[in-house]
Length: 334
Image 1 (cartoon, one colour):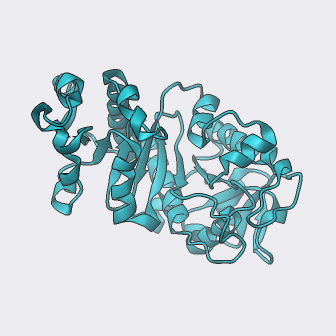
Image 2 (cartoon, rainbow, N blue to C red; image 1 turned 90 degrees about the horizontal axis):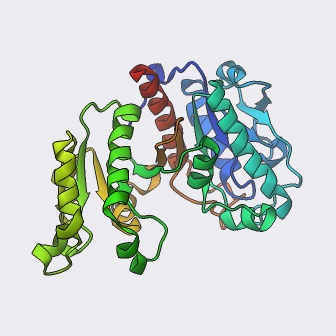
């Protein structure tokens, strides 16, 4: 996932949405520009009044201006919000503005004016309270804007890539939601995404079992026997390079990780605990299955430290780098 300066030169810059302006988004956007500058041009969509005091920025009128402007200051595509941003205290009046920046970014990437979208963290409760936001999060809203029914969440870092098949549901509901069809769609979208967005011609997928020890022959659960193993066998016949179902407790040490390109897990924590343990600061959230590239830092709005110049921009920097890398892979594969 390392991106050099030469590799980072792209025909269109990456669009960065401001996210919740009362969180750490404005601060880490500025810090990301200070690190990347002209090595990886991007522009922020947001309100100049929400940037940290004294932040060097330059207003642009179109994305292509960011290619030159980013050498000197943070390029900003100005989008006025209804209210100021008070650190750690989201204003209901700003919810509509947050949603609008996402819509603008999608329009720009669809038109080719932006090469990819990187989204700073939003606060879903603030959007629901302030604008009746009807989606669980960025991922579902972006799928709606793209007209796509099924997408897959991938978390990636230089150490590991993981995909949870079920995401934000209680653990007790996982066996009810998990099905052969859901797993099939997840695996096919993941395989296609690694080919299209990462340039891996024959992706190696490792699939975890649902139960301890992958069910241990039915002694600890039978989902592996009834549908997981048969599905993987079927997909192997279709040409996918898949191992599993594997015991999750032996999948994530260094020697095991060297044997696959992505670990596909059955539920949220089974996937996210390994990546956050191995590489907490550099994890990137990716949405596979969209007609455009979308990445995001793997953290939230961090209201507790907003406005204190304490936020670590590492995850956002990695998200911007990966967005540019994935956009190049897509262009190369066309």
